[in-house]
Length: 250
Length: 223
Image (cartoon, rainbow over all chains, first blue to last red; front, side):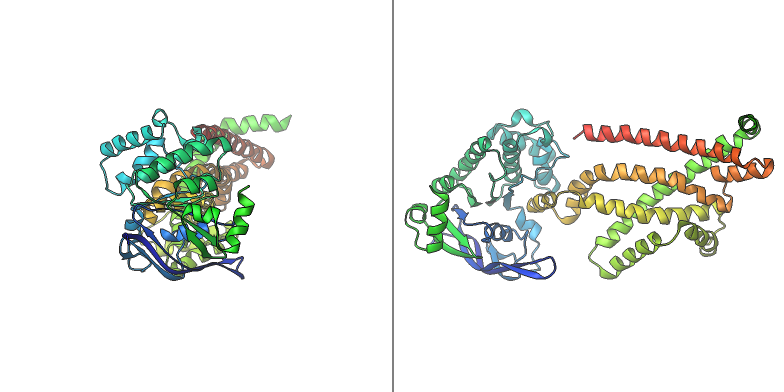
């Protein structure tokens, strides 16, 4: 077996809605993500996909279960999660670029502030990254002037500037205008091809099938089915997977 | 026509009391109040958010009590209490200014709270996901954005305070309303004096709100 980068053991997470109703979003998720593996998570909304992803870097703290990242149990309260988060890049549905900083500063802020690089080094690296995603000419603009697709490409390289060992994508194209989805997916594809371990929550079935080593189908707070993309897409075993796919694949 | 000629006569004789002493004391008191109020407001806001329950409760209690009692009452309390608790001699002006600062700080802490809460939660998540700790996130990401929500509201607070300082005249500290009372006492021309300070207050706040408006437009233009 290949080396595990992330391992989760029996994760449970629930949210209290309006102070009374409890929503049990994760109901025991155990999963391994190997180094260099590209895993896509699909499934109906409310199935726990995003919550699972956000648990991986503890943006949501699971109330039960363990997460082991690079051999460290990060769910342990004594662990300094900030150090481990530096190794886990995250890309959000709504980009969350920093509107008060220039494009270049968006990228250099974290590496410089966290002592990973000098200002000059960080700027060199940021320019190289921007060049890679075709945004070098925008380096001095503020994000308010960028299109959705450009913002998301910026968000991706902002995460890459920390040289993470894994990238977590939370529906990276769901908030984009249709004509901009392609440019963002191309960036992710190129990244994945370069060997970056990635966990991608997505509704883009074609994309998931193309780039993934493995697809997880999540529904009802558990991983209902997991397998190779072709197996899941062509020959789903779980009736819920079948139903979901029959609705999204025409 | 007596009314207007009286105003002219009053201004000829007492213009210094209104325009120099009155305005400068009013502006000084307002500036002190806003400056120290902003600092106190930030402290109260931070006190409400740190992970230490007793401090949270204390700060919330202070804010609620101050917001729930009349300012004039607070000025009286300040006037009598401040000289007793401070180890050095203080003037009435200082006592009243302290009370005004505390009052303003409580309102300003609410301004900070709403301005900071208005920043999208995604900004915090993005910053934390990069590995920034909560302090770095607050000072590098959240506050610089919140300031755009906070400054206009703080400007409005300043305008409110310019008017609120008139309450300080109860203790004859020398600001505009005190000037009005003094001159009225000398001339027995109540309507005229009140008209004069009314116009001055209006002009002051009008100028301030126009300045604030252009400042706000500049902030927006930078987005």
